[in-house]
Length: 302
Image (cartoon, rainbow, N blue to C red):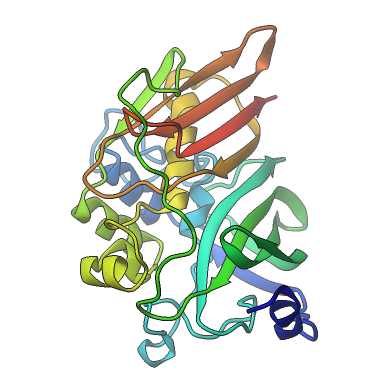
């Protein structure tokens, strides 16, 4: 497909902004803490069974367990993703990749909040490269409580065309030679993303995409060597570093980029820490022990 053909598919596609409202409950935060084998951040420390604290702040990025897109079973495509949605570009044999994003917090999202999210397309850019023709889409979301802006988030998504069973044009990074991991720093965290963990995270995010749970599909149709670890899960892992190692600091912004996929059955190591000469900034990275980072990010504190 030529670049101008891809552009033609979205030439008249201009979806308008959408607003949704959700009440922030405690269950998802408790469930994700269980996935991480960490204490619940919305309940009193060391007190079991007392229930969540109304008004407890969600950790940064944990708002992603809310405003989930629901779809009836008949509305799903062969990849498990919805066939049509307001912000899904109308291109044939569509495949989606999550490439990264940026978030800026103005005030914490709290348990019990009724939050309004306004979403719109910030940019739409067809490009051509070694991997073929791709469409880069940036979605912008603003989250407000009683009119107050809590946070603004941008998601970078990449779409391409690939017919079922067609050889994958987007290269999968090969493991590097054994050596020191490029994610270095005093803050560390570890994740063992097996099939069960990926299933639980998919359930928490209402994500039925088969690349995360269907081994025959992901290897034979999408062309990956194994089940793919969710990009948002890797981003959340990076933010575990300041949450666990600098709990007294308040995250103001987070920028991250996904660089290579991670597959189930491989240990993910995250590390990072404050930047010399800039105590309000921390650089973070995560990936396998013998390769370059699969995700990098920068946190800035207030």
